[in-house]
Length: 97
Length: 393
Ligand code: SF4
Ligand code: SF4
Image 1 (tube, chains in turn yellow, blue):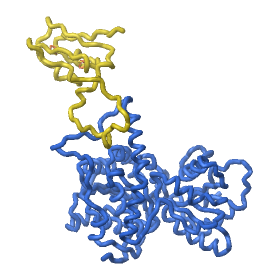
Image 2: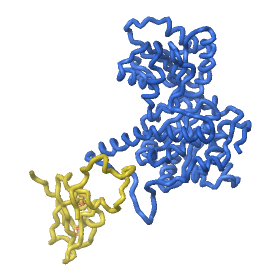
Image 3: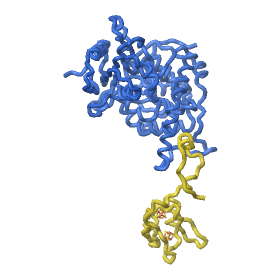
Image 4: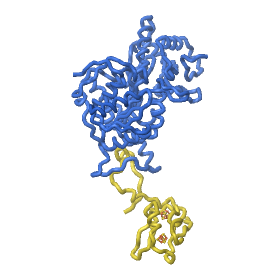
C-alpha cells in the first residue's frame, strides 16, 4: 500500500516527468502537513457520508458498522469535513509534538 | 522535383509546414504572423492539407491546444509573435518540460509599449529561458528550410523539445522572394513520421504535467537541463542530413569573411544580410572585418561561437531588444558572448549595440560606423554596457 514517496535521482525520472503508473497519488503522503486532526463522535454521527464526499483527499472509508473513519496517512487537516458535517459530529483537535 | 517560385515568405512558411504533413494547427492571428496562419487555414479548408485547424480564441488557448494535440501524438504547428507570444508564454514552459516537439514560427516583432507591430527580437528574447530550441532565419529560403528541419530536430527521440523558428516580422514575413520549395517526396524522406516515446493513449494511460513538490522539482529541472544540453549534436545532425539531401547547409554558428578578421560583428536574423554587404564594402576598403551569425540561440552553441570569434581583437555584438537591466550590464546576446569569453579568459575589446528596435532600419552605413567607433575606442577600463544606435538626441 501507501509508502513514502518522492526521493529519486534525476536520472530515474520518466521522460517528460510523465507518470506512467496511473493512480500513484494513492502513495502520496499528505498527512504530514496537518496541524489539526478531525475526530468523529459516533454518538452524533448519522452515517450520512457528507465527510466522505467532501474530503479532498479520500481520507474517509466506511467501516463494517457503516461509520466513516479517517485514514490519517492522507488527512491534511483542512477541516472541510468538520465544516460540512450536518450534525457537528466532527471536531478538529490540535496535533501535539 | 523541387520548384522555384516567387512567393511571400509567410505563405512559403505555411506551405513548408504543410509539406511536413502537420496533423494539427492551433493558432490565433497577429500581425505580422497573420499570413502564415491564414494560409494554413486556407490549405485545410480547401482540402490541400489533411489537418485539424483549430481557430482558438487566444494565443493562450493556441498553445494549450498544441500541448494537448502534441501530447496525443499529433504533429503540431502554430505561429505567433510579440504580445501574442507574451500571452501564450505561460504554456510554452510547459510544452518544453513535457518534451513536446511542437513547431512554432515566430514572426519576430517588438513588444509594447508603445504599440509597435514592427520587427525586433523582443519576443525571441522573451522566450529564451522557456526550454524551446530557438533557430533563426536570415532570408526566405531559410524560413522554408528551418520550418522543415524544426520538425526533424524537435521530434528526434534524442531531442524531443519544441522548436521556435524565428523570422523577422515584415522584413522576412512579408517579402516576396524566389524560393525553392522542396518536393513532398523528398521531405517525406527527410522527415520520418512522428513517433513519440509517450503519448496520451487510453490503452496505456499516462499523466503529463502532474505536480512536482520540492522533493522532486530540482531533479525534474536537472533532467530537463541535461536533455536540453545533450540535444545539440542531434540538432546539428538534422542540419547535416538536410544539407546532404537538399544541398543547403546550416550550422549553429555561421561565419562570413572571419578569416584574419580583426573586428568581428555578431548578429542574428535578417540584418545579417545587410551586415554581409557592409562587410564586403569594408573589406574592399582594406578593413579586416568579418561577421558571425548565430543561427541557434537555444541551446546556446558556446563552443562554436568561441571558435568563430577567438581570433578577433574587437567584437561587436548586436542586440535587437531593450532588456531594462538598469544600464550597467549588456543586452542578452552580449551577455552570452561575454559569459563564454570570461570562462575562457579571452578578453577582446567588446562593444554591445542596441539596433533595429521596433522596425528601425539598420543600414550598411550603421555597421561601418560601429566598426570604426570600436576600432577608435580606447579600452580604458571604464565599462560600457551597451549603446543605442540610431537614437535621436
Ligand atoms: S480535515 Fe480535510 S483532509 Fe482531513 S479528513 Fe477532513 S476533509 Fe479530509
Ligand atoms: S458528515 Fe458527520 S454525520 Fe455524516 S457521516 Fe460524516 S461524521 Fe457522520
